[in-house]
Image 1 (spheres, one colour):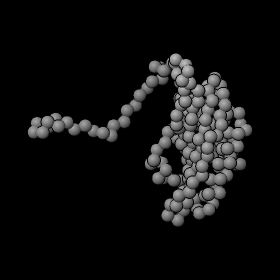
Image 2 (image 1 turned 120 degrees about the horizontal axis):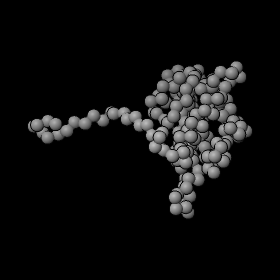
Image 3 (image 1 turned 30 degrees about the vertical axis):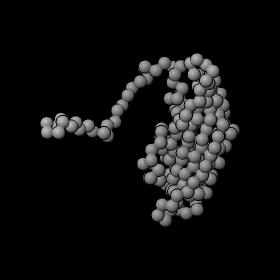
Image 4 (image 1 turned 90 degrees about the vertical axis):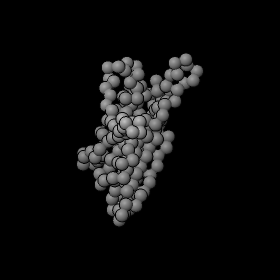
Length: 171
C-alpha cells in the first residue's frame, strides 16, 4: 500500500491450480468424463499408416493456439453448454453440447483438401463407430448438430480449421 495515495496494487495474471478429485462425488463427474472421453476418442484416430492424426489434443480452447497454426493437425475439445430438464426439482441434465475444433496449415489448396479428408473421417467415426456415439452410464447417443470448414490466409500458406458441434443425449 502506498502511503501517499492509499491505493493497493494487485497482480492480475495469476494462475490457480485446484485439486477437486476427492471433493466431487462420482454422480457429478459427468463433464470431466465427457471431456476425457472425447479426448481419448480423438487421440485414437490414426491415418492409413497407423500414425496419430492429431499432433496434440487440448482440453478447452485458446485463441493463442489458433494464431499458431502448425503443419500437423491440432485439436481442441470443450463443453459448450448443458441443457437441463426444467420439470425436475433437481434440474437433471438432459443434453451436453460439445465442440471439437481442429486446425493446421499447409501449401495452398492442399491444406483445404486435407481439411476435407479429416472432416469426413471424423464425421464417419461419429456416424458409424459406437465408441464415438456412447459413453456407458453417461451418454446414450451422440449426434452431429453442425460442422463447418474454414480457411484463413497465413502469408503464402493457408490455415484451415474445421469444427464439429455435437449434442450428447444423457441417460
